Length: 231
Image 1 (cartoon, rainbow, N blue to C red):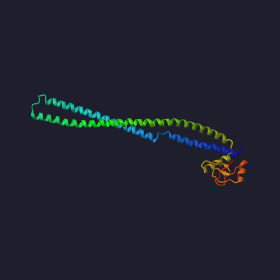
Image 2: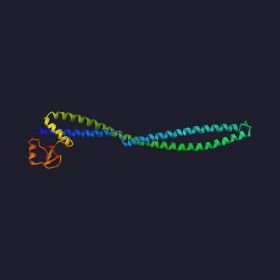
Image 3: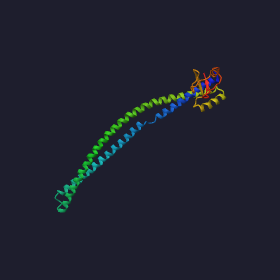
Image 4: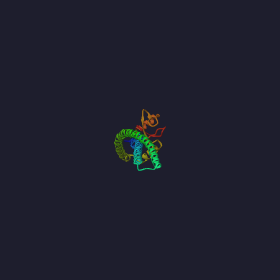
């Protein structure tokens, strides 16, 4: 096998290494949590927080209402006990009972509102949890496939790197130096095939003489893109 053919084989290996590494990067990035999953998690966090807020609010209001009921009951017992004789004190007790009655009515309204809000929060929490479970399950299933692909890509890159090392030992240093120089200028593609008298690198015609020399194993270059031509 000519040195040009060896270079072309090296080019094939390098091209596949580049493609596999690019895909490996995409696979690794795809293993991050998706925007949909992050949004679903945020919705769930908000729903849990809202549910806790209204649950605590209802509990606090119920405690406050119960305390007020106890105070009102105590005042009524004192009012009707017959122990209070002073008219002004009796009037003050009645006024206090009336005031607590109004407070009780307002608190009962707040308790009712808190119960309604808590029910809404429970409904939203259940919906958020259901949505999160679906999205998370889909994401986890995709992760399993990505993990398999990641492993396969890593193994393939390792094998290709080994092949590359072996191939480098068959190519003369001057050829490798030129190969590297052209690769840097031509987006990693230094050696291309001639197909139907056309350079597959730039899609322009190759002269019959250059194609003949390339077929004989000589190192020739595309007059347009400067890449090494192989047949």
